[in-house]
Amino acid sequence: MLYEKLILSKIKNNSDLPCLWLENDYLSYENINNICLNLSNELLSLNLSKGDRVILLIKNSPEYIITFLSLLKLGVIAVPIDHNSSQDRINYLIENTNAKIILYKIDNKIEYDISIPKYEIKLDFLEKQIFLDNKKLAQKNSEINIEITEEDTAVIMFSSGSSGRPKGVILKHRNLFQSASNVSSVMNFSDKHKELVINPMCHSGGWQRIPATLIVNGSIHIYDGLLSTIGILEDIKKYEITGFFSTPPILRALLNIKKDTVCENVKSIKILEIGSASFSEVEIENLQKIFKNANIFIHYGLTESSRAFILDTNKYPNKLKTVGKESPTVKSQIVDENFNFLPKNNSGQIIIKGNQTTENYWNLYEEEKFRDGWLLTGDYGVIDDDGFLTYLGRKDDMINFGGFHFFPDEVEKELGPIEGVKKYTISGVKDLKGVMGQVPAAFVVPEDPDNWTQKNFIINAKKSLPSHMIPRHVIQVPDLPLTSSGKVDRKNTVLLYYKQ
Image 1: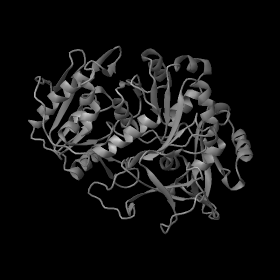
Image 2: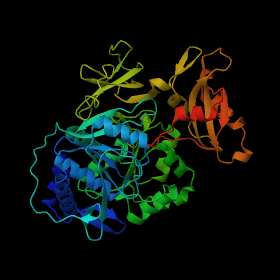
Image 3: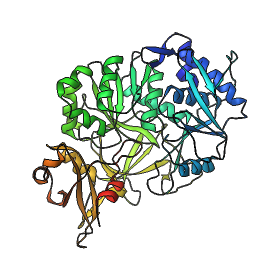
Image 4: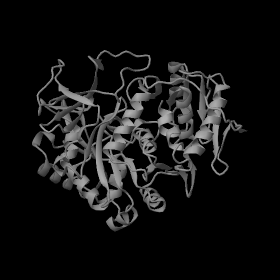
């Protein structure tokens, strides 16, 4: 049972071990267990049973962690939803999962027409007490005895649903534990590890760092307030943070800050993890100059199989164009369109299986996604002779430029950072002349929009890229839209800024 491995096993050795920080005060593992016990008992009184689904509409907060852990304890299945979700999305997921109740925090005022009961969760950190709809929950001393196995479902994580309806990824207790164990072991988390959580916990990228920290007796600090690079740096220094996970956009913003300022604030960082989008070799090397005391890791994974590949950039400086080697228990292959296994150094679709990998979706059977025990990722890549994966991109993002097939991620990795450009993304767009089918386009956010021209971008592109990859359109934009998990939303970027 995951809850026992994350919480109960720690209390036996040191009941006052810090678990969850709020500024300079903390809840110990024993405090967390007591609070979860109280909340679990109250949830049982609402007629929740093992296997029931509960919607979590809670932003990153101590309440999110405590509520998630309490549901694990009961064998109730968590259904996390981004706290900015629309009424349409919430109602769809309620109906799709047949959820019993919604648990929310006051920050997420539910003013929608919701068909199931909703209950506010509130934590009094100083008094170490939990409230449900302003009712202070009584202290419970007797443990809850519900038999939960590693094969029981722990969570259903839904995709962002940018195209069509979202799919619910079923993750068992086993899947969550294996992913977290892989992170903590490969990245060498220590019992002194202090994690800063900045990514949404409702996505696997943000959540998996929580159990990875708890497995090694570490502690957690949750970033609060409006997300900013200055705020992140201040928290790292103030709370002596030793590790965090980030998507590339935030780290690129850090690289634009004065180097001495960043270096001074990040001395305590031992582990930095990057994922969810491409990051160039030059950018990695620039980060290494700033995070001088840290091991920097790159990962490749999906909600269906989190952190399937991990690269230790310090250990393998000659592999910075890859996303690393298979994590423990993960097996992978590259296949062609007919599901034939390809030899090393051939490009094709990445397929994965292992203890951390889902086996199906909620209320949805997709034969094309699962075959002979393998998950077909829909991502393309190449595995070299040493077992390192070079990620090429999503099949849906592939650009077909007059018969040349390539991925935006390939272009971005080759281009790397460009002088005068704050951020950019590459995407295939319709050839308005009707000759090439698609042409590559660059959507650029300049550092100084009033004095920027396309000239430097094109010069860099011609130096770095083969002719067919050079963008045929360079479009200045005010900003790049992101998905809820922090990735650049290429499809939305094209819809917003490419006028056909």
